[in-house]
Amino acid sequence: MTSTTLVTLLAAVVAYVLKVLLDFHSAVRSIRNHPGTRTVIDALSPIGMMVVTPIPVLAHGNQRSWKYKHAEYAELGYDILSSVAAFPRVNTDIFVADAAVIKEITTNRSRFPKPVDIYKVISFFGDNIVGTEGDEWKRFRKIIAPSFSERNNRLVWDGTVKIMNDLFEAVWGSKEEVTVDNSTDLTIPIALFIIGVAGFGRSMSWTDDVNPSSDHTMPFKDALHIASSGVFAKAATPNWLLNLAPTEHLREVKTAYPELHQYMTEMVQARRTAEKKVEQHDLFTSLLDANEDEDDGQAKLADSELLGNIFIFLLAGHETTAHTLCFTFGLLALYQEQQEKLYQQIRSVIPEGRIPSALILGRSVFYETLRLFPPVAGVPKTVAEDTALVTADSFGNKVTVPVLQGTSLVLNIAALHYNPRYWDDPHAFKPERFHGDWPRDAFLPFSGGARSCLGRRWFFETEGIAIMTMLVSRYKIEVKEEAEFAGETFAERKERVLRSKRGVTTTPVRMPLVFKRR
Ligand code: HEM
Ligand SMILES: *[C@@H]1O[C@H](CO)[C@@H](O)[C@H](O)[C@H]1NC(C)=O
Ligand SMILES: *[C@@H]1O[C@H](CO)[C@@H](O)[C@H](O)[C@H]1NC(C)=O
Image (cartoon, rainbow, N blue to C red; front, side, top):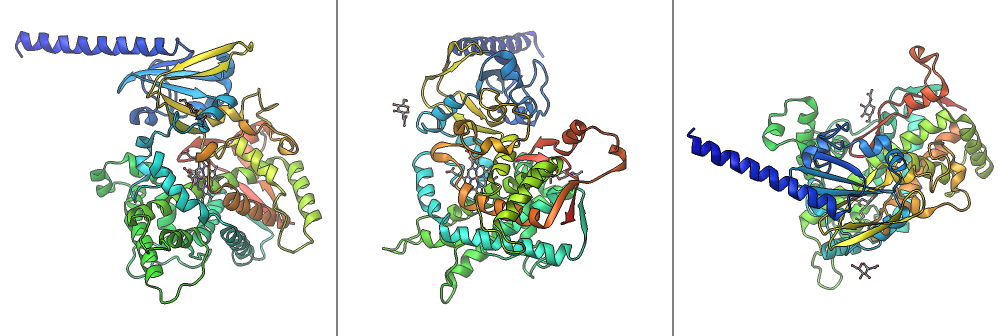
């Protein structure tokens, strides 16, 4: 290398570093040096998302919000924190745990739209309601929202009752005690079968559908589950590596997507060519029906958009539900007095042996679980025009944080749910806090505003209540006794059983439970 090239190269490096430093400085100034982290790697960039634990100076860490919850906000004295980073580009992320500010953000879609680019990973079957903004989103929401109807709700309820009865009769049978070493192994199939029947109009059961039909290499239920849980693996793995499929998991992920695509296409075809239409109210059928325009018979959605949205029902509704159920069972096992109260309430409402009917019952147990373990611990937004967020410091003084167009925002649901300003003794499990009045704007497991969860009431709350009532009325849930943990204190046991990590959604690490027949 000649010395001139070397000098040119060096000059370019120096110029780059200077530019980054200047940009960084002006980014910090633009938010008036609002407290938070200053790191090399941007937390919300693809590399930043791969760094798990916080590394001082270098990386914010993708588990940070879940790990510290509200602690950092309390320490620094603000419910808004900043994170300025230099790489891959100078970027400012603003994390919000102030309920009023979050409300302002969720209720003004034009000023704080979704960052659709980071949702590309969920759009490989086609554009969909979760991954779009503006008019495109509006069009999707208008067609999709009516699918969550009273009739679909009936199907959710009946389907859940049948699936739970099957579990008790065909799988658990006459066993007095059932031990499940990792309770997601129980809650994942439950949630999957429900989304199968009420989402896709396909009954699956505990025993059948293990062998794929002749033109498939994977059973429908496996394709459904792996395509949903493998979303990050699929997004993070380059295609050439996925094709090589070096691990068993990647091999399954590689197979699951084309398989699910084929299943969904067949289902659309079968419904379209059916001689006479059977009346069905699963989400899939309702969406197909809504898609046909009454006037001219023209489809409102392109086929890829149809599949994209159907896949979203699965993605949005499967793991969120399964993990929430798992945490609920774990909490009830740890807090026996709460479980007993719930059991007594269930018994007082439902005569023994009958199917549960009171929907409101136990809702507070689910809400408290969702407060403590929000499946979606951070909701991303962006800033469409220069604006400002107004919060208060811990002394109650007004603090204005200017935010420029293009800033990334994160609604930090974990920090909001553990914010002592809204929740007394926030780490404690107290379902009673949801009786009577509670701070609604500080409870956002389903996000808020126009883009909040469509599956909340008619789908999730219905299946959740049905599952919990049926299970608790027949079985007592306990933590599995294991010799190696014999001497632990309640606090240690609680810590161990409820340990969680961030995956596609907040995930239990290992929850060993025993279900004892009452
Ligand atoms: C415990 C259960 C659930 C939780 C915690 C949950 C949470 C959420 C959250 C946080 C969002 C906003 C996501 C974002 O802004 O990126 C969302 C949206 C959505 N959820 Fe749920 N969800 C649950 C169950 C379900 C179920 C069972 C379904 C359907 C079967 C469903 C369908 C949807 C849909 C379609 C959207 C998109 C709404 C829009 O963008 O207009 N969810 N959910
Ligand atoms: C959203 O914010 C803009 C300012 O950018 C304001 O003009 C508008 O009224 C707000 N919309 C709502 C619904 O609050
Ligand atoms: C328990 O299940 C969760 C969620 O499916 C999984 O991530 C975890 O690795 C499992 N733990 C063990 C010990 O198998």
